[in-house]
Image 1: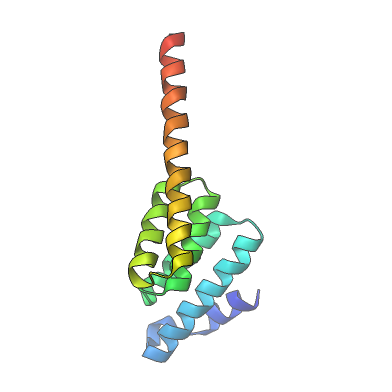
Image 2: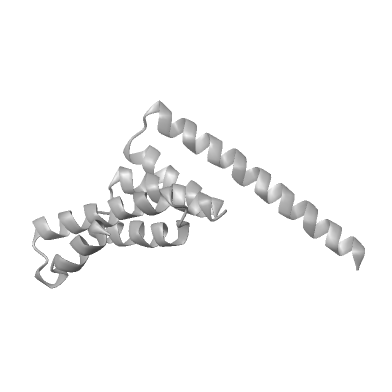
Length: 122
């Protein structure tokens, strides 16, 4: 609630660099709170708003990737993790990307198998 209040009282129309930076943080932090509550769609929307203000914020990209993953939107999650690795090629980020890519491939294979199964039942 505090992050929502901070977003509401910070004035986007008076977009000084300081206000834009603060709003980016408020959106990103609210996204993290929403991820913990498993409100993944709302978290993704908050991250997207934050990234409009601070497009290369690694922490926000990590959070949005987690929000995408929570929605089983693994293509989007991988895309964000690729940008994270590009901006911050730390071993932990590379490992997270590799893990997501495996999950994405498994999801694709499962969907392909399900599609074949449905084709055979027609």
